[in-house]
Image 1 (cartoon, rainbow, N blue to C red):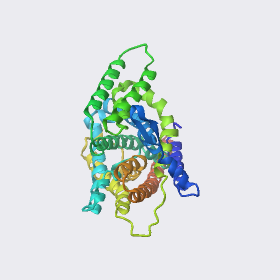
Image 2 (image 1 turned 90 degrees about the vertical axis):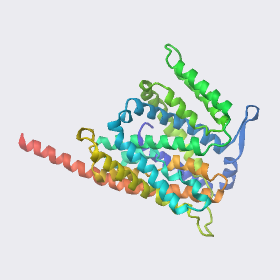
Image 3 (image 1 turned 30 degrees about the horizontal axis):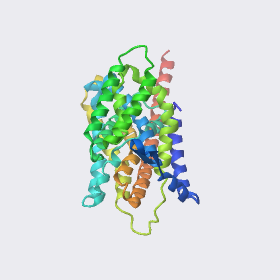
Image 4 (image 1 turned 90 degrees about the horizontal axis):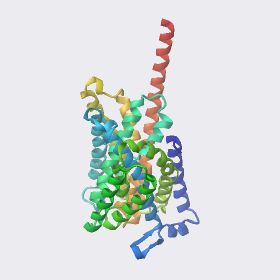
Length: 383
């Protein structure tokens, strides 16, 4: 499960299984289970099964995202202005344009609250699509997509923290801050069972953030950013197989397990807004800004990517999937019919992005493989 391809395929299979089961003869029983509450009321924890998955399991995924973000900000592509310029500007375009498309189609309705849904990129799924279809592309394509997706996650984290937070309890935020500061100091110590301590800190931080009213997944990001950048790679390697094989598939299974609406009445505008904004918005926003930024950069700082390569990566970045599904649940939790339409739109828009991105990546990969063969033949002729 360290393979990007395996992770993407399992994620897709879990989503399909969730949708099929929810609309099968046992669907009503499963949906009752999904919405049933379990927890520990004495300590203020009583969540539905679905929320345990989205709040706790997905926090582990955001921990990995936080670790990757910490590495990129300190030691990787995002650590220097010159190398960060192209993915950051591409990321800004990939957030702004989909949001604007969505807003233009929903303006004047109560559905405008879903504008963050098409801004997200699913790191695991997007990298999997690139791995499946992008054989032969320059290595800078994966670097660009990873940095772009990490920037998108940073934006998604900020959106969740700011726009999906009500009734913030300052005392619990102070407790969470104290836990984070204490763990930051512990990370500097030697000869201690640090991974065990990280697990304890994660659970304590998650509980404090949950009680504060901020979405609990933020706890994973905070812990990821606390851990020293030099240790993030090894920890990511340990956690990623678990997030790829358990956390993300289980979340996708539950998030997509919805009863399909009858569509007897007219479909709300939320469906086309998301289904168009994800592929079209990402392709336009990322391609235009990233390509211009690459052209304006100094020759030694440019990515070895052409316009069609940027289009391929931009299309793949339109696979919002898990993060978009989380935004969907947060936006329309109180409107089941719109929630179902928006969920289907996320799947539809992500599949369109995957199809376009897969086709372009495969086409460009063949182009680069032909170039490589031509170079080898020329070298043999010269020798």
